[in-house]
Image 1 (cartoon, protein in one colour):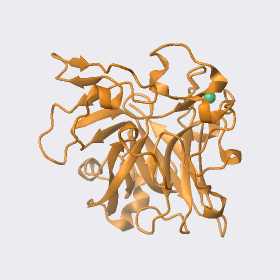
Image 2 (image 1 turned 180 degrees about the vertical axis):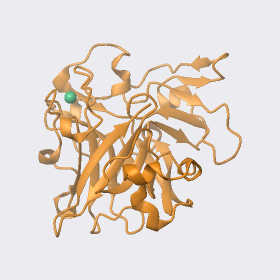
Image 3 (image 1 turned 30 degrees about the vertical axis):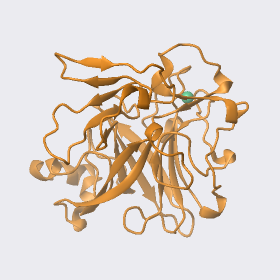
Image 4 (image 1 turned 90 degrees about the vertical axis):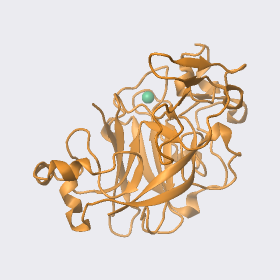
Length: 299
Ligand SMILES: [Zn+2]
């Protein structure tokens, strides 16, 4: 089956956003405040995990211009734990019609004077412990997508449903399961860490809990966070003059790079537990907007 893998650009190294585009983290684009999901556990606005636009091949949302949003609670004042499924109310995913979208970056509804509030990566909550809850916008690391690359795997389209059905999945050969791409992708079938779920839904995307970049390793002062080089026996951390609070906590050079297809450096992505993966599903319900569900699994 066809699937699509992204080439990433770190948000703090990119031009400021001017248009709707597929992206991870940062402030969402175009979502009206009334649609911004609030965490059922702590009552704080959630943070954007990803927003993905309808695309006839990559992500069929049934209509051009529709956008699928995934949010998750990232509030360091509460550390809401059950973000792994939507029934607990600590994550939320939904599709918005183009007519309802705005043409600007969006700010959460529960932050006073959002234009002047501090935008802070939730990874940087330990950097210094002082923040004012209603003057702080917690974001996940912003990562933009410079292009999607079309790939193919060995999974026949006719076997698609085998990969969300627990019985059929258990009868699938180890070799075929190992051949499934487990990184961030749109399309094909999920590479499960635990057992299959959502048998009556359509799998549309999987998300890794880190980002790999093919751009040159940035300088600490360009990125505003420490840059690590070396292996675990000889790891050196080069510090910026000033830490940017909207940057990742740290980025790390890929010491094991062997081909041009391998990323040059990494940063952490959303917290999906211990080396976890996020899984996104949709379901069409008549003429209405497709429904969506997001879960994560970890080791
Ligand atoms: Zn919460």
